[in-house]
Length: 138
Image (tube, rainbow, N blue to C red; front, side, top):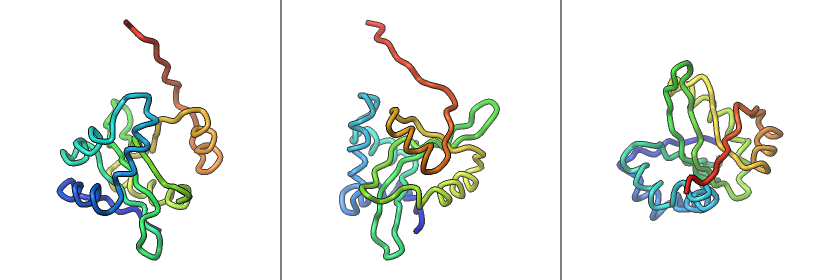
């Protein structure tokens, strides 16, 4: 099992022919923050990195998009989108931490709804950093 970063130059192939378009499903649960087409554009412009989660037999177990953020006191690899239908994402978590170190990050973060957050805490040991709340300004 390995994680394979896909270069921005190969996003069209990965999206149209290799199955990365399933990330649009993750975007659909983002409460309107981003659409699949917008994610594809960010990936193609190199603003996020597309990650292929690959099984030992070479088949794709899932896809993810990550963002490297340099915050004032820490460099963070943020998982912004992930789709892995029965792919058991936790099998890839050590690889994700290795990828974070390759990018110079000392932390891995993600945003999650309550059910996802419980799963991430149980499966791979995430702990809450803070809670993001929202109210309409209109």
